[in-house]
Image: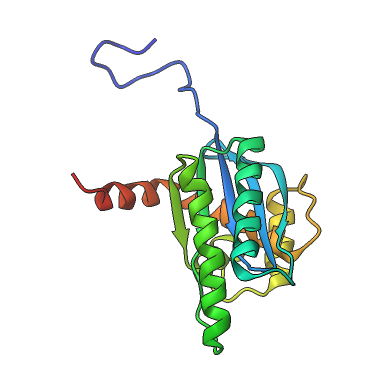
Length: 184
């Protein structure tokens, strides 16, 4: 035991493991990846895709994404969520659709009561690969290195795991920012 009023502890402080879902939004395919972090170590839990029918009307495709993510959250019980921010591409229509899919990616964990953090693509890439302009194959390779037990079949899953890894690395900063945003 430590001394009264003291600075010395002879017993290690228990670490709390947190389960994080990373979500890579897309209208056709939304990748999701779940990791556990104790602040030092990362462990792969699961990953996959939620797909929407390409022929269905937009509203029904968005519902598929929302319901699919709700199902994943219900099954795996993450405690926090992280979503990639939308990048703007040259086609405004595609950007708008991606934004709507991203809305479902934000809504599903929020409706489950999870804190939701958002990260720009360059922060995710820099956290995982060391450079803010990493290529898809570099991200997948580093995710495989950081999570050796991970089995992902697509770049969307690898990206989602990278988002979860990024949040595990930056979550204390993200929580401080979120606390400042909450109205009193």
